[in-house]
Length: 323
Image (cartoon, rainbow, N blue to C red):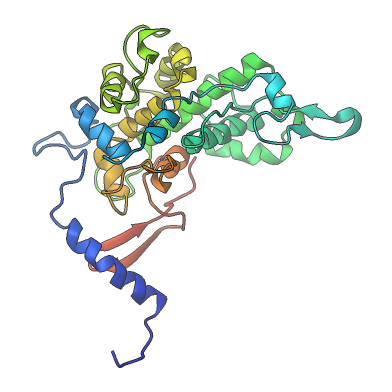
């Protein structure tokens, strides 16, 4: 290159990533199954508390971040809060005599786990607008009814909103378990994992020591159950509704999604496996977490398809529209 010659944007990106490619060569990915482990099997029982903790928080999470992630459940906000805008949105819909209040908002106490709540809220709204039965998963054809959904769908009775929320969360976990492998190769068996702290559902399981997040991860793993169908996934979540609403509900649900995907497959889909999924200073999630919640794959980008940068480095985006 001659003096003063400018690199194109793609050339700059390739140069900047060259060192990353070199560093990643030969690096063992967290969660990779041991040699000889059955291909296509969900190896979630082999995941250790240290491994899960390192993937989530690394070694630099502040006390404030730990507090954020042990103070946020997944639950509907009281209707009085939603009606008064207590969930942070203008809850009024329509005008005049036809005005009604949005009654299916999720309660948010902390900023860090907002990606989990945003994805759960989106999937909940999808179910309400599509008017899908809570006894079956959403199919792709149902999306065609969005434009004809009545406004009243967003003001459901509380039992209907709760049932739709449980089904929406089952949609997220089952998609994580069954979505195609964005990195290529064999896909894992279709086994979703519902993982919440073991012990007394109402007492000991939710007594959180934020100074020992690794122990909490161990408790989550200790309470994990495998589910071989969408219906079984929903039933397991419904049986743990109080755990979902507990202070560790959002964190445990994230763990469930990661275990459903399998750590090996999730990490293979990421661009870079070193950074923890939760920012140690501010507590927000990485793009891979939001991708996992919405499309079932741990991809790091939001563009369509893939971009080959050469040298064995592939940037993965959204492969297809999720069903």
